[in-house]
Image (cartoon, rainbow over all chains, first blue to last red; front, side, top):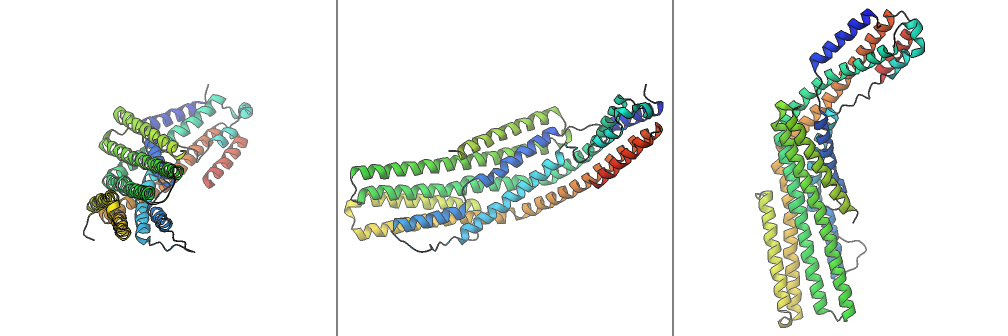
Length: 286
Length: 130
């Protein structure tokens, strides 16, 4: 039988924890974690504006048979474009990273093990506390900690999602625009440069049929590489759209943040993001 | 040029691309009618038009900055608050953890076990320092 004072204490703690109520934020954490992963795929997109500029500079030199000790590439504007993109990316990633940390259920900062050790079984004879009572203490301490911090986190998450939604939507849509329209747009220009180069090469140079076939093969190989890059950028853009949609759903359901609908919605969003990350990673290996 | 929006700049870039493609096709289709100098001239034009389009796409990206400057500050401010909350959260949690440990210690006191009390205090101090 537990000590009578201990029983009173356990009951009291359970009442407090019950009144505070445990808030399940797992779905918010799952979504924001996947959102962060998705946004951070930016680092794996092996292309950018400055890279395009230097590639083009090199290409033009090759095309005109120019050999220089060091190529003089005018890429200042492209570097600025990369800076802008990076600012948008890092701001969005920073926000979702914060949201992930705020919604995490991790209680690892404090371990209850030392207390468990202090109340270990061999002391029980003198200590007059049974093993199950010790376990109960530890469990209740965790419940109490979680219930209070969960309420704090829930309050803060609501506050931040509410004030961040509009700017987050704009930021993600602009980043998506840069990737899908501008960066992918540059690849269309690259396609045109290559197409024009190879068709003129085949027409003008005194090449034999075998050399022409080799040139054609090279052309299609490069086109295929561009296609892979486009698909990668497209997967990244779709993941940005999915992140934005998820954030909007979260914002729309702030009053029912632990409701079944939003749990289901965010879990689906997290799963969609995982699929897109998988698709992206698969393209990276090509 | 600076008055363009990022979307207008992107549309303009597409126009340049279409124009360059037309120049390239025309040069190719009239190959035999053109002198070497004319071909070179057209090749240079083709290249210049492509370059304009590419520059405009880079410019379109830079122009995005103007569209989002307010949003960037807003999100940075929210992110700063989140970080501050995380600090507060850590303190709250530590406070509660320690309080829970103190209560457990109370149970040890009720049970009158000095050894366990000493160990629990030690754990509590370690937890606080962590």
